[in-house]
Amino acid sequence: MSASTLRYRPRPDRNGPLSEQILFLAHRHRRYGAGMIYLKLRQSGWVVNHKRVERLYGLAGLQVRRRKRKKVPSQDRQPLVRPIAANQVWSMDFVFDRTAEGRVIKCLTIVDDATHESIAIVAERAIGGYPLTRLLDQLASTRGLPQVIRTDNGKEFFGRAMLTWAKLCGIQLRHIEPGKPNQNAYIESFNGRFRDECLNEHWFTCLAQARVLIESWRREYNEERPKKSLGGLTPSAYARQLAAKSATLNPGL
Image 1 (tube, one colour):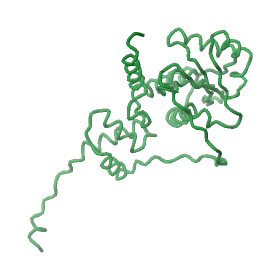
Image 2: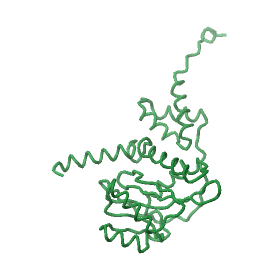
Image 3: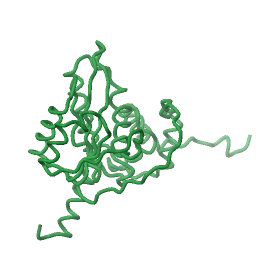
Image 4: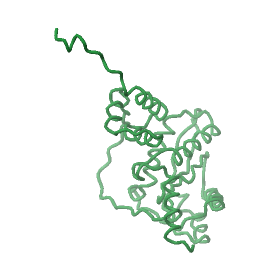
């Protein structure tokens, strides 16, 4: 036996606290991968290399199992230009789920294309044209209204109530082509996160419980969840950054 083998003393594991924090974040955010865990660590003040996080994440066996999606034929994509300020363009859509007794939950999702903020997620049993305009009037009193609203060709968005309301408010309605959800990519991406991280993770016993959990997730998405497309910032922090930049460029406004 060599002397180096006989006298070897194992070094203490210096990755213990980091591994515990990775496990904590992975159990709290079960649909977050290694990249999102790394951003959350940096958000909390950890100074760590992303390769170490990926290695420890893999050693702990925390890989997120991908849910299978239906295969669709490839189509030519049209690039979307991100607005330069908040409240210029909103995207809207509906996402459906069910409560324990089998009744439908219809969620209206609204996203600001510039800041990626979730402006509202309204959960109801049914939302028609007139209730939709009343909900938008409520948002106008707290946040204001956009210049453009992008939607699909659903009857709620293309009905007389919505068209009349948009004309009275001076808002341009921009409807995508039928069968081309890629033209409304911002809201489609948000809906995927919403279903994966919220709807699929909870079993709603009633509509009231669904509203509480959905609103809690929406606030966490805006204020705590970092986004890679925003440079690791949360949507709320990016919105404040855009507002400060706009105030610097236009001090007289």
